[in-house]
Length: 418
Image (spheres, helix red, strand yellow):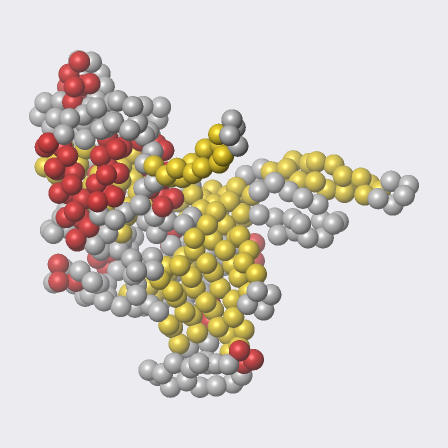
């Protein structure tokens, strides 16, 4: 993983990670003196000869900080469809007014690239007049929706040079929804365990699973066909969500041959008792069906609801609408497969109360938890009779809620939809 990026001019980008490889913080050091750093060396500039700013990543929250002012400021709260940001004038100039939070939504292309960022309408307090004493008279107005950023890409994923109206600096999450780091002319998209240098269409370090693909360079991106394919962090697991009022959770787990196996804990007895109207199938899916990619699965004929084709396993009988690809190691993939298969083989489907249920979302989360992947939410419980406030942490019961919790706990994943 890229730790310290040293520039010849003395500038640095320093990344900090936890033990699992999740990026927690990025520091941007800018040299205030003229210096030349030889290749292979790093420079430790004293505080008076540099400025230092950065970004802190805390779950789905993103903070910016300045060591000059020694403050952290909440910048964005990310979600599957975009992010929430805040009017920088709020709480500042007393004449600037106060606005609601800004809700932004991505418009994506077929590769998951963020082509446009759309800001929803919001309400803002503005000064419309002054009273005889000179105090401002405020009024609430509805601000219209607006497209705040547009990005066009070369085939390699490098953003085009944009004019000012495209607002290229509005937000950095662009190619495949990943962060494009431009500081000091770096111009690399952060893929987590390595960076994608678009100008040369190569990664900055080798693929850790390159021995699985001996026919191509270990630095190649998207099989040298970035217009059609995307690249994720090596072996991965994709969590599937049907969506809708009656949803369903399932998984795709990549095997040693690079294929994605389908796993689903189906409502077996529900299917039988309802005559096939609900429950998916009368037996569980434990990896028999394989696909080239999660997107290929979503777009396949197999991803459909048709009870007449269930007997021959021609459909999954759900028609999933979305998926979230989690970066996992081969060891985690094996643990997820083994845990899911063991549950499907030895345990029964149950729709009991939350603490005793054994349904699709529960089994998906248990399989991920066994591999060390967080899926839980925290809820504050207030006992008004005794005035005690406590917090409890648990895996969500409903599939839609479980899908959102998995995304929030693992923000480095890749969201895709049908």
